[in-house]
Length: 173
Image (tube, rainbow, N blue to C red; front, side, top):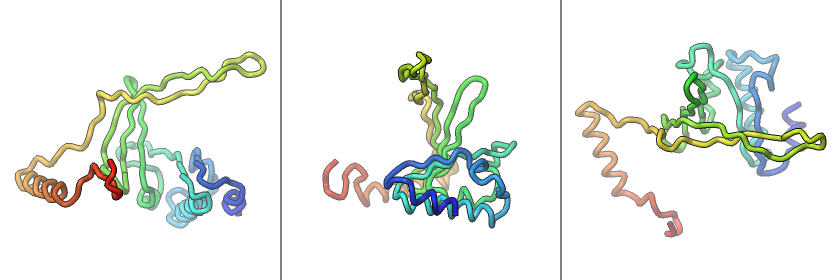
């Protein structure tokens, strides 16, 4: 009912940020397919009603290499998933999943403090912006096996001959 009530009051074409999924559904069991299904359905209802974007902040488990905590249906239903990591030396994002694009792109980034002004007491109001370190953008390596190289080259050639990615359907760039 909370999701239905919330969906009624949000404006069209808005961005809804759920931070974090665990806090938004405190009584749910993230490992349960039933509970995760209800959380996913709630996010889809919000997205459908708002005709906007739903961004869900969620955490990995203790073993980061295993990805998102909880039931695998969450990652399966997402259009995109970006994993953000902070190490002692840098901050990095990785495009873990892209339903309509290339996965496994990543880049280091910095957070830049932005002064937004002062409040009525004179205290500084600030936020952060993300500045990508462009020299660090990495894409997935091409296959290295001889059979894989041959297949990959053939696919690239055939795709590049089948349509021009630089033109839109209207013929304009």
